[in-house]
Length: 229
Ligand code: NAP
Image (cartoon, rainbow, N blue to C red; front, side, top):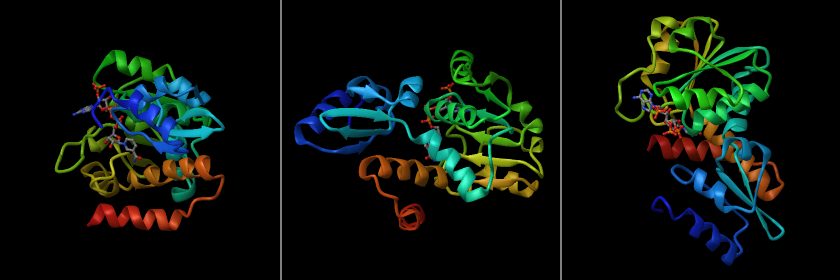
């Protein structure tokens, strides 16, 4: 779907009586403007990744941040409450993660990135502006940039800042093992790829659409098959 046509797509959803849909970049802000109502999280983010029909009303939700925190908790046994967290990047995914970590009770959420205005706006969601060098003091380090995606061999920070006792999460899921995760693991950190977030944000959407518990095992297996073939 070309950028700018999200409003027409939402009207199409209305006309066709479709009960739910998922939205990805670059349409998340446009869809937030096109739905009838926003959830509190979608409103704070100004972005929607899930649309749900509630009676005749289209509600925009954002499940990325909750999916990220769920993945940390259920797949890694990592509880963000009371933890020091660094988020690298200030785009849509970073914003969702910063808000979710702050709402989960993180002791602090530090945001580092290359465009100061975007970093400041992201930090306003519940963190403070910092730098990638803060990584050494953190319990959780999150790469919310596309650095390391595909064939990119770059790293979002100097890996000597990482070590044992830390969890390093990369939101990138293609490839499943990014250069950052390889470096983090080599230094004794727990390395977490973006697959868990992908599954758990979809699980939230499934619950919103159906009211039922999603088949997480089936979803993970399907996603793994798609990403490894
Ligand atoms: P986005 O809105 O385009 O934001 C990307 C952010 O990364 C921006 O802050 C950008 O900086 C920064 N950035 C881009 N290239 C960079 C570089 N070479 N060095 C330093 N910073 C760089 O993208 P997004 O939607 O937030 O997605 C970010 C990543 O998360 C993508 O890899 C995406 O696939 C992944 N993601 C994963 C999931 C999941 O379920 N696992 C969900 C959503 C997104 P500027 O602010 O200067 O532009």
